[in-house]
Image (cartoon, rainbow, N blue to C red; front, side, top):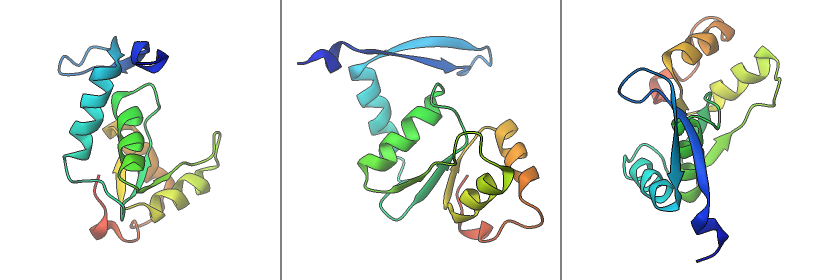
Length: 122
């Protein structure tokens, strides 16, 4: 057991209460949460995941790591990206991890009907 087993990750969440809070996740909890995401069956080697949530959120942290563990692709728009960059990345995705608020912002950047939307999981 190295120093990684002693690390604590601080996670922002509103959880089931809807009230913002910060939780401390240890290595065992991180492993369990990654396993939980992998076992949903939503991700895998053929999935192109785009997360529009920050790394401080539970979904923004767990989904990209679980996708990499499964050998899949994670689309990462550039920091400070132009709207067209985010729209292009979203058009290439097959799975979008988002909150309703962030999804609305993304949809506002994509004019018209989203190409391939019938083949995308959100």
